[in-house]
Amino acid sequence: MSSSTTTSIIEAIQNECQYLDDLIDLLKTERQALATSQLESLETIAAQKESLTEKLEASATARLKAMNITSSQSQKADIAKFIATLDAASASTIKSLNTELAERLSLCHDLNNVNGQVIATNIHTRADIISALTGQDIENALNTYSATGEVGHNTQTQHHEKA
Image (cartoon, rainbow, N blue to C red; front, side):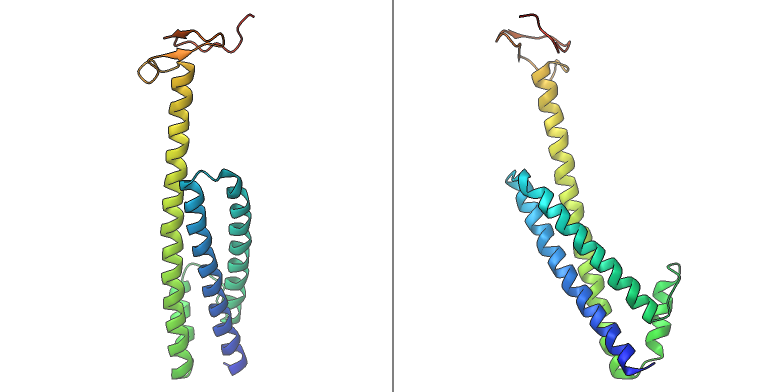
């Protein structure tokens, strides 16, 4: 393995670690936006997440290609085989960087799961509110308001009321 290829692989992993750091920061920002109902910023955050994900995927594909790894079935074993062909210093560096990469990926996964749960909870809460306001669920809608301001317990939706 040439030293320039090894260097490019090390640089790729370092870049991926930086992309993941950026993604972690973005996921934390997304969580804050969800917590404070800054819904207008979520679209921008989603676009930034997509951009970072595309960069990560492109870098990982290029890195695996440089390692001559084509199958995703045995990637871990193939990476271990590749590392075994390197000199001790390069192998140690790549092992260390792969560990950092795995830790960051795990953190991203956890943060993304939490954000997904918050989104699901928000959707459920809003559905409950809509149900209560429209009177579709009498248990959640003790009192509902009609278009004319009347209070009632109507379980039928009134999409159109005559004026």
